[in-house]
Length: 462
Image 1 (tube, helix red, strand yellow):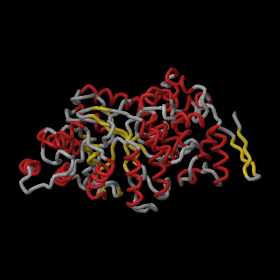
Image 2 (cartoon, rainbow, N blue to C red):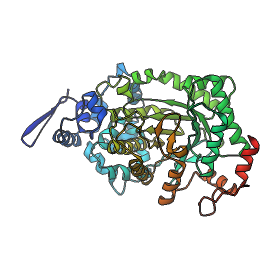
Image 3 (cartoon, one colour):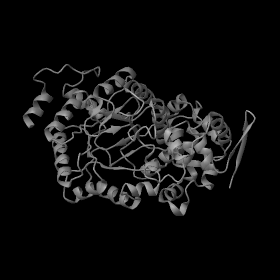
Image 4 (cartoon, one colour):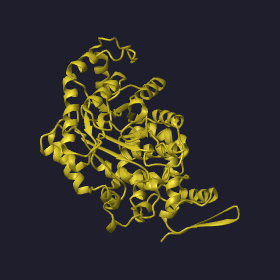
């Protein structure tokens, strides 16, 4: 097994394997400290980063962090690696890879051409050598475009998931939140409800509610009810109008097992959703959510740092050509990301790694009420992600999810980031907003009169 030794300030630091080197090179976070894999000091972290910079990328193909025969995510990463796409990077070290990513000549086309040759471990490794501005710069050059009923991820665009959750799944309250979000120009990524109960009858009711609203008003978007994948598969068998199939995923087989899923199950769900052919401009039918710390919380981390495990989840997502993937970055809690600074760094890392791997990344810019964070911290992360070219964010009424009990971004926050950075909704959705009088020709929200057509149509329908 490879062993690295470095001396800083008269003290020696030893790293027995690649797993340890990656963990010690990670920026501080409470989850790695909880797992006992974090660097014990800033000096040890610097020593690990210096050594990591000289590690050849090819070593990640030879020294697997989690054994091939023990983990199906590892097998997926190894078996799906594109050696041809990796060729331009084959002679580089991790440090040289960072320089290549930051080079003027490395543009969107170059990044797309190597995406299938980059493993999650390579992406995680290089991110550990990067400052926040490096993560923003490289991610801003990565474009991952997906389609279902509209086109997401185009340059100059930022979409919004309209998240109208309700603690009792009241259809009228959910419909009212959807109307509120649409009137702020939100909902082009997806109108997606987290159900309060994973009940099949309730799932079908919510699916039909959103489908009726989309169909009645001709909204060029897609729906999703974020129940367990097996419930959605049963809803498909019963003829329910399922657009996107959702599932939370993680970076190890054991963690995914704790979620009640496997690659074989996701393969089946993907096939069922594609057979429905409900998309009008594309067939990206899957929606995944991830988050740093999920493997550790399931006791399934194998001694690997949480950010590297998060990147491995994107290899799972990449297999299914999803429409949407997002890191719910601060949702798991301060045991894994303690404060606003750690949440901010993790959000930028996750977005960078996902985009580098060719995944259509969004981010739920969020925190729990017991974290050392506030909405000002989220404003900073939201702005940086907008600059970095994030595909989409969340739109939650008042930024306060009354069902999941956490703080996210609001419809107003989406307007802020679009205005300050000159970003626009998905093109098909933008045209619909203009036609319905929600925005004007300069993409500004119209003041809604009492007899506004969109409001009237909703009132007549309900």
